[in-house]
Image 1 (cartoon, helix red, strand yellow):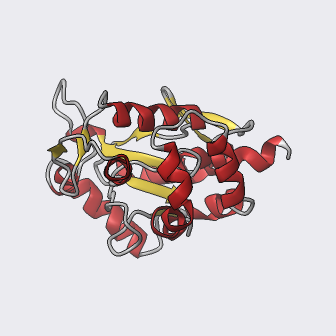
Image 2: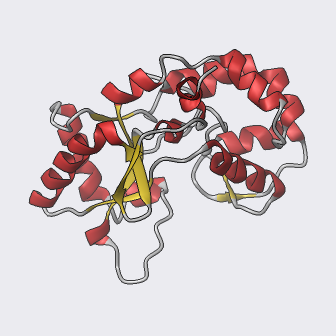
Length: 224
């Protein structure tokens, strides 16, 4: 298997460009991202990236730290919750807001988490929560929603939408679908299983036992 075949899993050697300081995206989406950024600016918003390309090891670190209690778990309402002692309950708690390592759309280099930088008061720490989407960044997200609905978002759409799979909706996450669809053509659940078998990942036993059903609820609904 060559390096390109491993790109959907956050492995291999993606062709990345620094879109904003510290945030990298697939070179293929840069022109459309710049167009969307310009459209936001003309409407009075500052499209600021909070997360972009994320390699497998980074997603694995997030997953394992949440499993160990080093990162806060959030419930379905985005509120802090206690860490479950049961391994399967813990796995599903993490999945409420975090993608499976190797199956995160952030591995593709085509997806970004965005906010309106101009709406942030000095020192404000962005949380990426539903409350922000309907609060401090409401006007920005209403603008994005209108552009997407009109087909005027230059290929960007929301994928973590209500009624799609079991991951909670993420209004801040937008994906350049024309490019991401190409990157996902070679995705294989069998390859992901092999990666897990050879990786020190938390909840490994139950992950492997439930992988087929997890894919139906937490992976494939978002590979649109």
